[in-house]
Image (cartoon, rainbow, N blue to C red):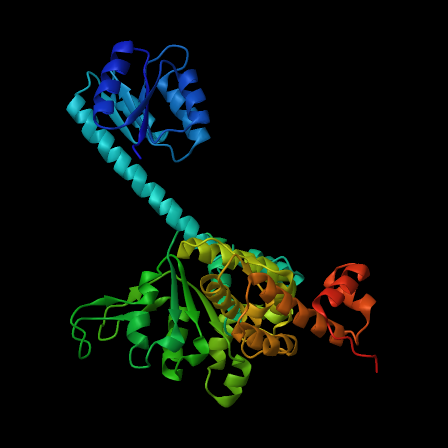
Length: 462
């Protein structure tokens, strides 16, 4: 798709000559003879680039530029003037103009600078889209009381420079919390550097954190900047800090105290301004008792403690998370999002989620890819959950046998599953029709018809 360029000038000859040249270059051109006309066009259908004359009656180019930037702060605008001055050019750039071209226009120069401006615009749009995708991927999803309390803690800790110790089980989203704290801090536009201390071999952890000089050890063929150095001015997130050795803990403690360090094999002292956030799935006070974690480092890190709740303690967030991960994965995989049946959602709500958010996300991705059709049913979920909760286990046994049977039609398969599901619900409610109908959210008369149609075998109470 070709780029759209809006040319704004009160001289018809300029509009005609520029339009002709740019259309020959393959661009779609729109013209306006005044600032107000340009603003109407911009508000209705924003172009990719604006070529804007400065000296125009009614509303000059600088005022038009200011109003365009109010409508769209990222708008790409190139100013044109036959009465140019350094002062005017500087004022235009300060107001947000990308470039300034003097008249009489060199058409070759104009097409070259238009090409550069549109390349810059495309790059900025790609960066913006990438940033939006990243923010969506790391979004904290949930409206439960537990999540509301967590967001309040993040909002309190974020704007400060205090260190934060984030605790919680594996897969609860501790890194998401760290990123949210960074985003709400004055350092948001500076680097966020995450280090998984458990994933780095003991022999390399110091080099990763503090960097090394060329020749510091075998294989150090060049100087390397460490994570503390890379995070200078921003935030360093030390994940699974409970897996760090005591010797490395001592060096991290010194950096926290002095905000300076030397690279491995080096002698030059490097000063840094880094906010450190740390996380662990271990009970660090117990690790202190065992002698595997330094007490002084714990108190240095634990200025603001934040505990991330496990998924089983915020089950009401599961439907929101399922929809979020479904659409996120569908977009990433280039697939159409699937619906989740009420019965399938019930099983997801009942499951204990030992792997927490990470397990749920992986499950939704697997179901999106593997389930045929547009709806994820309870049988699909029951077959995928492991270890299965009591409720899912009841569904899994019949589901497994149902999926191995051969059916003449989709209707026969659906009827077989409905029969198994209604039988299980009746059994759960001791064969009480009213309670079962309430659970299934259908009328008693409708349940009676289903029982008769599907030939569900009713068992006497007691």
